[in-house]
Image (cartoon, rainbow, N blue to C red; front, side, top):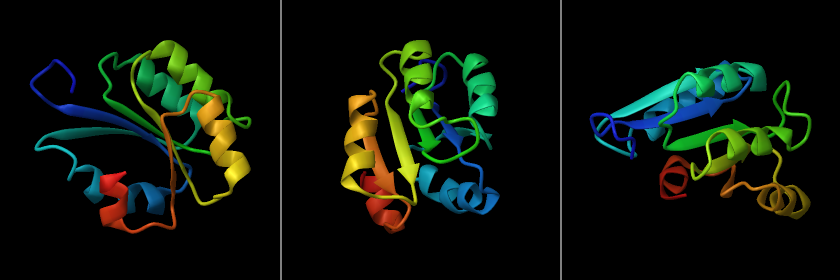
Length: 121
């Protein structure tokens, strides 16, 4: 976890407010203290990410504005090396999963899974 105060810092970018709000309680289950930085597009995520150098996890929606396919993954693997970048998407197929992993993602989570499975992932 981040070195400051044992707070887990998560950057979560998704263009749907309802999705972000719905997943926040599950993210707060990951650690006693979780700080979530939210963005609704890649540009906002990059801006928030550049202001926080000690992120512990980056969650990106695969099909949000600015992602341009998988380009968002490489942006964060370069700017935050060693921080897991995980794709969260409503689109789940083998081609997308493999492409995301090949681009440097640490994981791929379908929005179709339940909350407990999300925490375990």
